Image: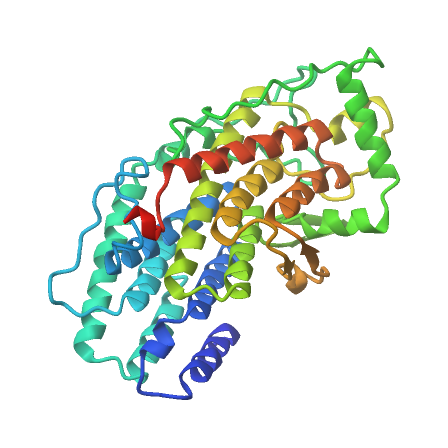
Amino acid sequence: MNRFLLWLSGIIILLSSCQKADYQRITDNPELYRITEKKLNDIILENNFPPVIASRNYAYANIAAYEVISAQDPKKFRSLAGQIRHLTATPKPAPGVEIDYPFASLLAFCYVGNAVTFPEGSMDEYVDALKKEAKDGGMPSDVFEHSVNYSDVVAKHIMKWSKTDHYAQTRSANKYTVTKKEGRWVPTPPMYSQALEPHWGEIRPLILDSASQVAPPPPPLFDMKDINSQFYKDVLDVKSVGTNLTKEQKHIADFWDDNAFKLNVVGHATFGTKKFSPGGHWMNIAGIASETCKADFSSTVCAYAETSIALFDAFINCWYFKYKYNLVRPETVITKYLDPDWKTYIQTPSFPEYVSGHAVISAAAAEILTNQFGDNFAYRDTSETEFGIAPRSFRSFREAAMEAGISRVYGGIHFKNSCIVGTEEGKQVGQLVLNRLLMKIKLHEK
């Protein structure tokens, strides 16, 4: 048994120690859902999935879990069928059949998480452990069987729908064309990787009418001849900030780096290091918020699901405009025109600059979490401690999103305008999700 499963067993023993036969103390516990979410996050990290693909994993897995919960209590949680694009009614359980809905929700999450993009089987050992603990906790065989069967029905329904989002077609789409046109994005050191997911803007959104529905203004025109041009000033600003970073700014840049795969070059040796994707970081924040306010199981699933939906659409929206404008990165311009020895503080990712993905997706997630848990929700973000980075504290999710955006300027990889515009773009995406999606039904809405 690996270290993670030993941890899971310890948590479950602790949860069930007061009443071993009461299996619901094991299954109906939000901490178990947070553990399961973290398991998916770790698998995404281990398999080196880029941020946009990771967002697809999170969205479909959490939607599957949520649909199970909405079947348990449709007066409190409304199904996503008919609310998100092309999702038909999720099959309901047979009348009179007893189901442990939290357990079925966990299994549906794992089923979809297992199959969306990475090789199937990554969560099999974990699922076996969940099933064993449910049985050992005293779950009746008929409840166990009905719960497993219903989780399979819901997961297969979500999987069938997920396969119509145009993801498969983008796997064989044309690659990005690198040209010598001034101001156009080109690969950056040290990996000089090809452009990441240039067709992600063609993926079907969940809430937005189209990938381009929330449109930022065009970026300043490339101009390195006129020192008074806005573009030239923006370049100088990045160079100046990056050359004079404070200790605090470096901590902020490191904290929000969220580089799924960084290539380290030491002399003639190279090696890779991994962290959560930016979406994974915000999924972790959703878990921290759930734990901080002691949300119950169903509300925890709801928070994760709505956050993942906003992240998914925000990435699609952002990527559409990245490859519409194909703007060059600061590093390329500074080393060519101003200082060939200048270095970014963090590694430049392999896609165009405008707009900042961190700014867009962070602001979108912050709008959802603010609606779920309240404004001025103070919390301590410990997401990065496993990577040796000290925690940071925030007075609100929106404050955290603002910091996530500006962190890319400190890292030397974005122009400030891209982060400011991206934050506003993300806010609009988040608000659209909130305006169009009704998940947790309030008493006056019944």
